[in-house]
Image 1 (cartoon, rainbow, N blue to C red):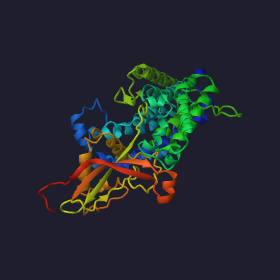
Image 2: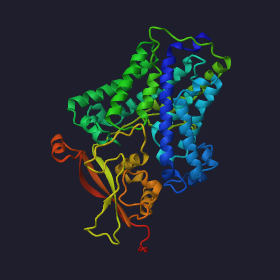
Image 3: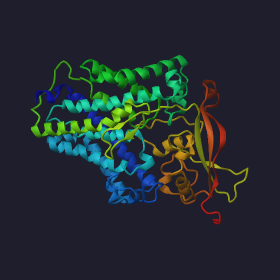
Image 4: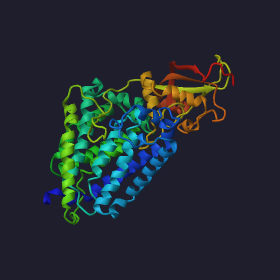
Length: 474
């Protein structure tokens, strides 16, 4: 069928596939380095406990069969190896069917991780990676031109990402309608980046322009993705510009880069030389792509209905395979930044003059003199959940007690998640406490005078001084 493929998009496909492979590599690397402390045999939320109470049909995962630390590590590092091979272009060296199978491997492997990840993997970009990765299986390699139907399905994902986020904002916090949300957001976002303070101190009229541009990008441009070129390409290009702006202004794991990859798949990059020549697509391949398109169309009913609902929810999966999902971000914006500061002491009995020493996290603010770092697309899961815990103790209930317990025992895997521990693993603290502070970016004058990026004010105790066993006088 002549209409089935579109040779003009071969370069767009290549950019999309290599970017997706890089995101996969980042995701598996994060699992390899963090999974043991978060979900391992002695982790804060062990996988073995979760699979013992959760049926396979609700959370399909290889870890129902085995979930020891050695197997978890091998699985994550194997995912890194497959992702690196795809990043290097291994799929282009294989027959079409084998290339498709190779792309299916990281999807199946990461699905196993997400489905047992619990709180640590409850972010919208996990489902976005799985949905995008599933469609990438059917995008083909150098043996066939990109199939039109899969290109349209990728635009359908991008539409839901952008339009869903735009709708949740307009329906949510009134500051989005008043164009004032960015007066606060750059300071209160989950994990500020090196330039977040600069963005925060931009003049308020610039913030109004930022919000208005966001509304245009997320509400006006997405329908244009389904128009002929060059309109669709220009809409996608503007989305890429917006995403790069977000990359500069904060750390949102791989959300922005995956959105850029989706938008890149809608660009017509054929150039003056014209399209490449490809052989006709095999009949079996056409049949598979058509079947997948029908499947996605059927599964799109609930996400599409959610977009139209006044009770729109964001970042929801409607099936255990995460094939078609709903997305959105920042339906409400915090006006105040709270941070939990975790401290420990080796003293036998804490007193008012006790010298408490601070645990430093790699991404979340603690030391007021330390400039926020750039970590995205890498995802610091504990740092992100600490931000949520500061908003409400309910977010911390499943795991915070286990985290404190591991600090009190000097658990090496947990300490590796931190930037700095004031206590070595073989000499852990006797007590740990947590206090809540309000953090603000310093003014330019204050920054010049003190060298501090933040100023903070004590709010209240989050966790009183706690020890493992009150009867233990180590």
